[in-house]
Structure formats: C-alpha cells, structure tokens
Length: 143
Image (cartoon, rainbow, N blue to C red; front, side, top):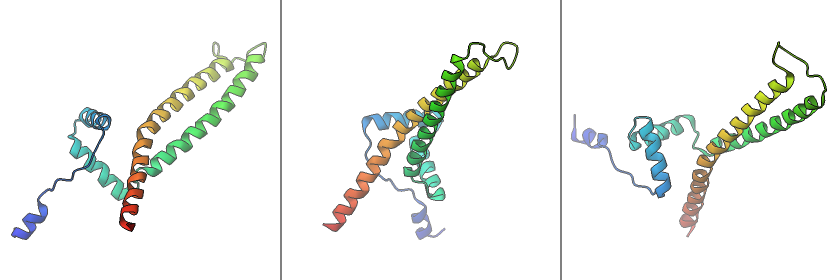
C-alpha cells in the first residue's frame, strides 16, 4: 500500500460535547448492547446517512403515533363507557365479556402510550439541541 492510502485509512478522532446525563445514558445503552460507545455512534451515523433520517423525522413520527394512540384511547373509553352501561354483558366466550376485552385493549393502549412518551422524551431533547446548533452555525456564518 502507498503511504497516501495508509494515511487515508487511519482513523481520526472527532470530539463533541455531551451532558453528564447523555453520556451516562448513551454509555449504559451501548454497553447493554455489547458495543463500545464509538462503535454504536458510528452505526447510528451510517444508518442516518444511508436512510437520510437524521432524527428529526423520528420525533415527528413518534408525536404523530402518540396523537393517533390518544385518539384510539378516547374511542375505546367511549366504547367502554357504553358497554359499562349495559345491564347484561354480552359474552363472546364462556367467560370473556365485551367489558373484559375492552379493558384489555385499554391496558394495552396505555402501555403503548407510555412507551411512546418515554421514547419521545429521549429523542426530543437531542432534536431540539440539533436545531439550536444548526441555527447557531447559520448565525455564526452570517456574522
């Protein structure tokens, strides 16, 4: 190999800042997957580059899903209220009533909403920081 090719293949360091909380969360997550933090971050960057998805659309999609889940939850609550007013529950199976099925669906929906909210809380701060950084970069370029 020529010296020029060897030089191009050497890895270079890139530094960026993380809060203490971000560093702890990212290290814990990458370790839980058996990956070094740098390996995991490179994988995320390769994925973002190949899909064109740099995070903002993920937050937007999660917000959309949360809104949709809330609408579904409202509909289920209305159905549950209606079926709770019926004196004689209609049995689908020998021991399962409509109320039981609706309650199961409501429990599942609440679990999904909670899970989505937790994911949004993780994604949203980094998206807002990225937006601020981009604005700061543009402001600095114009000065």
